[in-house]
Image 1 (spheres, rainbow, N blue to C red):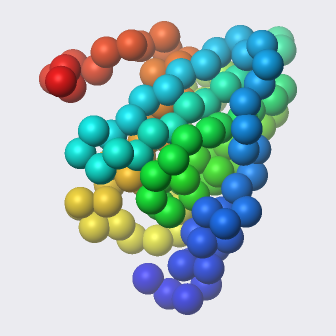
Image 2 (image 1 turned 90 degrees about the vertical axis):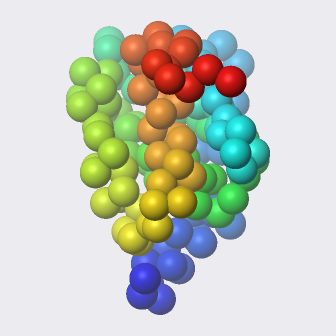
Length: 129
């Protein structure tokens, strides 16, 4: 992990973009990672099938919170159908750093929350506590 990549990640952690909540979101979903305590909520305002506004809130490690900030920047003004196509490789690439397998869940939590919200999924197979 180079200095520039780490600075990019830390900047999103220290100065999160789109942080907060929407008063009346069209889509809202929250999930956590029970193994580490990270929690992310994403609120979306959808107009003409595009993301007009997005906010995230939560708590957790620098990677999970920075990933949420980066992801919300990625999806502003995007069509919901395009958002559904974002995959884990896209998310990991957007982070700009290589994560160890132990940190994958941190880096991908925001994407899981987003996808759960846009698809209306409340339970992922095999993840019951």
